[in-house]
Amino acid sequence: MLEFKNVSYGWKDCEPLQRELCFHLRKGGILSVLGGNGSGKSSMLSVFTNPSMLSAGDIMINGAEFKNLSGRRLFSQLAVVAQNASAVYPFSVLDFVLTGWFPWLGVMGTPGKKEISGARDILRRIGIADWENRIVTTLSGGEFKLVQLARAMVGDRRLLLLDEVDGALDFANLVRLTDILCAFTENGGSVVLVTHNPNLALTLDSDVLILSRNLPYMLGRAADLIVPDILEEYFCVKVGQMISSETGCRQIIPHMHRQHA
Amino acid sequence: MKFAVRLGFLFLLLFVIGAVYLSMGSYRVSLSEFIDLVCGNGSDDARMVIFDIRLPRLLGAVCTGAALSLCGAVMQSIFNNPLVSPDILGVSSGAACGASVALICGGSAAAVFFSAFGFGMAAVLAAVLIASVAGNVRGTLLVLVLAGIVVSAFFSGIVELICAFNPRADEFPSILFFLFGSMTRITFDDLWILAPFLLVASLFLWKMSYALDVISLGETDAAGLGVPAVRLRYIVIAICSVICGIYIAKVGMIGWVGLIIPHMARLVMGVRHHFLIPSSMILGALFLTAVDLLCRNLLTYEIPVGIVTSLVGAPVFVVILCRNFRRIRSA
Image 1 (cartoon, rainbow over the protein chains, first blue to last red):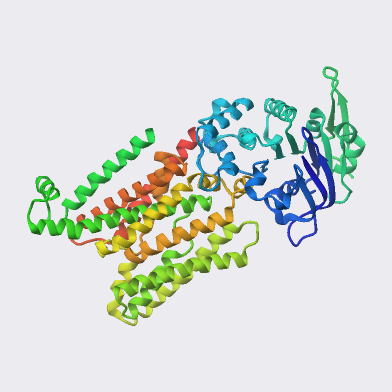
Image 2: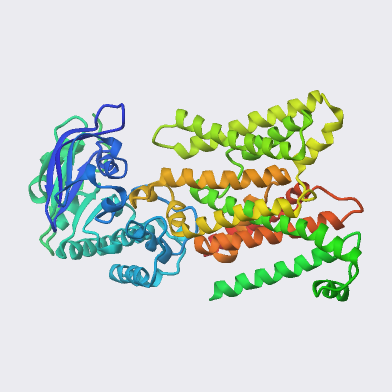
């Protein structure tokens, strides 16, 4: 579905943030991307919206080369949910989600009945159908993330690139997010999930990519990589873990007390 | 449906104000006389005042209000900033400079128009060029706004220089007249140029409503949906600059309309451009017609329309802001 071949990326005229990055995300897979602040997680997704950040290597999407895909053909296959988006104008939730159809409709297009029912369908699947007439500028950060996710899923896109969507979600919505993502991948969709929460990767039992400024990146299964030894090395904090007696799931706990060198 | 009803109501209001506009003034026509005139009867004097003098001016006010509001609405969207006015890139300062230069050189009315239009376009072009030299990929929009402010300041400086040295004292009132803006000079011949431009531009922009919706969500969102944002932005800037340029070159500087009317339109009809564009245009037409009606009738001599738009526009804007914020907070 998505393949990085020796990809180097970074801001134009600056040192690349990551070099020679290789991974293959299969159909129906989830790749959780972890790493400290400034390790190039968000920039990895920015490559899709700002191709000048790709300094070397190839990205393949469904067998087609990324460089050869134009805006609308590219974004009808994938959608990026950005970390820092905010709305200025008070659109309704439904109108906001309708903008997700842009790659199919184009500059001179107008969403019709088919697009509106498609958007409503997505809102229903996410469980926020009753938000349809709410105003996006009045939503809380977490609510807005879910609406952005709904827009990204419009049009049956098969690849979602999510930048810290879980950051602003409460517990209930975090569970809702995992349900949505599992259902999405069971239907053959693929997800790249940039997150600061290693437990989300464990819960989803996903592939994991850990990025760092100084260390080489690591790629593997969540069960193998999300362990205290590796996390301590990459995040430079003491990390513990516990196994829930009720669910049997392993969870990571960073030591939050102040550490004196 | 709700939209059509509201729009219909605004149209009706425009017709009523238009009728009042035509019948009121130093030559007053009663309602029955007015109906007579519309039916083709009535005195020749009254016919001349109503149809040859007031009607072109009324249509001029309608078109100018609609044009400035249309440009304001879409410029606020592409800049993703509700505080942008259509002359943010310096078109009106450039036009004022062009008009002043032509006036002190003793140019004819046509020369003043073309000089104002040319300088207006040059100002926008300068702003865009400065932004493309100074800007990098990130924050291009902010650089563009700053470049526009710089260019505006520069051209305003030239106008002030011309006024300060005042080489031909008898041209000074004409320059002031341009800076204040006025509907008095519009004739039917002008309307044949002004109106078709506005019609074509508004239909084109209206057809792009959905793309404008997407781009008004901001740069990050537009990029994440594959919108050719940069190209689209420059197309819209080009259209708006030409429209603003020809209207400002004709009627002079009229501030505030392009800034406040889109805000009102958003309150009345919502933010989708499919509704925002027509509602902005008709509200702008209503506003400028009403203001020009005041200008003609408030005092025994006429007040320049640009002054009244500022005097009326500023408090109206404050009311809108307060109401708008209260509404959003309580929602």
